[in-house]
Image 1: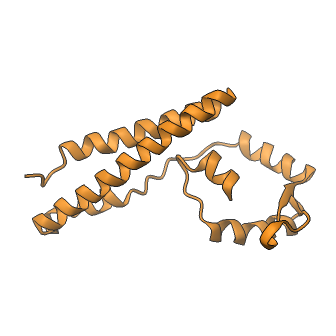
Image 2: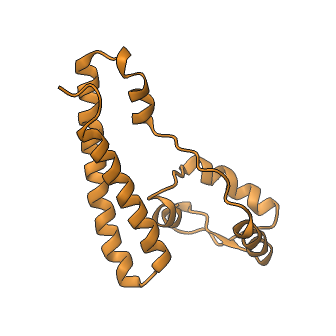
Length: 145
């Protein structure tokens, strides 16, 4: 879970329930294998040769269409139905959230740059730009007094 969060977290939401639901399925299909139980009964998995082949095939397929799911924009789409104070609070909460996330991402980027992983650097830079764009949108969001 930590590995997935570090690699994918800036741009892809992964929940523990998804991971724990999918790992046994992947093991059943022979794409991963169980390792020795770790501390606190953790169950490590390792990718198999078959899993690597399927993963490589997936990497070569069309990425598909982006699917934006942004709770702030969903609420803003119904902004005319909000009470003004409710909308102000929503914007203030999201500003705080995105400001904090932007700071976290900047720190992550410093660490990743030390490891010289150009691809992870690029995805973190994308995530930083995304956070900046949300904050910029909040600066002029409809319904601000």
